[in-house]
Image 1: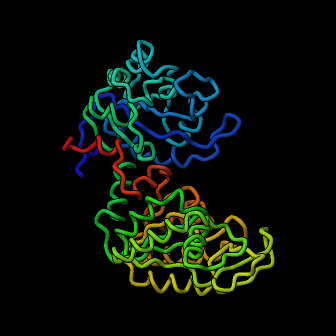
Image 2 (image 1 turned 180 degrees about the vertical axis):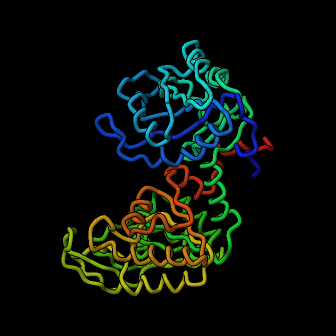
Image 3 (image 1 turned 60 degrees about the horizontal axis):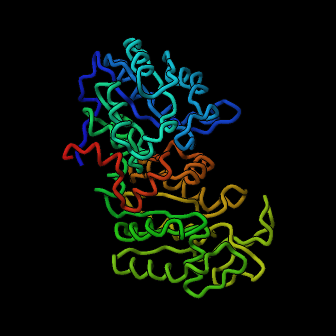
Length: 398
């Protein structure tokens, strides 16, 4: 795929409509996690340095096409000003005369923020008239919201066909990282897939099994695969009704030359609580009244031996119930090993998904991975092998 970058565009004196993702965690009118806001700063800094007038567009929550004061973006101004070190002005509209006058009044170096895009029904329906009304406000369109690009909305897909379009620095970084992970990766390539259920990640597992050399499974997902092999999982989280699907994936992986790595031992408890009494047992010896909560030490060593020669690793999901100590041990051990190899230049590591990011932060190594995606749904759909409308729309070939 070939896409334009804002690095190569002449934006001096021009109004840039920047699609951002400001759908951030918030409580009582205050932003509680500024990660997505902070990661937009390089794009905004570059556009301002190059003399552009920056108009930021985003959604927040699910107002379903209705004006909802409780979901207005106005409360974000203090957090945006602090993170971007810029004078950020707010407009209560997204289109029409009010928005046009607001944009016309912005000066070079200032940043404008339009109201919640989803206050208008045309946003989520990708209405062409709404996209045209947005396009009237600017000269250039920049998408820096990979996390929203799995949806064909007016501000993510429609606008890209109406104005000269480019990827922002965050989008560019994300696309380059994802290409390094599954597009044109250095091999051998391993993927870690964990979490509670396989039912929500069937397409992910099928796609990964076609592309990776090793598919490492953990958490409740691994339990379902073990059950599909005839192993009694006791009281462990396990989707017994998905056993047939698990067997299909194993057969598909075998045909594709992908080795699925399952636990050989597991940490089990009879009551799930912090510092609960626990044992490491063979997967063939799980007590009927116990549940698996983490990969056992032999499993971790087996995984580490498999990734020893790998050049690329993609990670989505923990190996166990990492939120409750000490059942983060397996996830932490693998995370720290991958981080060490990454820092040594031996491996390219890409991770994504909410639980994954939290697990890596818990292990203290999130900053040591090659790339951490905060995209959530878009990251998962990319793992499934789907085309993402907002990304495809940036393709110069379109």
